Length: 179
Image (tube, rainbow, N blue to C red; front, side, top):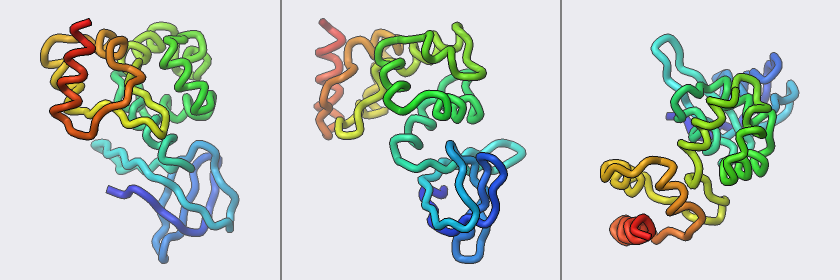
């Protein structure tokens, strides 16, 4: 998997850029595009489809991580996830997801009220600020396996600092769910 690329932009077509990295041209779809001839670096998310291998380039790790979360939501594909990042700032997206603001999410092309509700249901409580450690995926999986819904998990465990030890994180999550 490709996680980061640095090179010179040799072609630009809207948000799609071709980045020359050591004589190899990588085509990336970006949030903001770039200018031909400039030196750029991108954090990359690789998406494998049955008919293509697609690369998406982001200026920051936070953008890439949010794209990955959105793209992993049922009914949201890469195009809609990119549209969300183009329409709303990272802070606006975080706030909308944390507060359940479906109106803000509905401003994104391709996201209607039902889809906005689904996104909030799936992602509420899963976003953290860059300096706050996130809940480990294994803990989320364990809670879902115990029958808790994404909404219940998000409401109970969102916004707290997680220990790095997964067993301790699971104990903390279970204690929060019991409240």
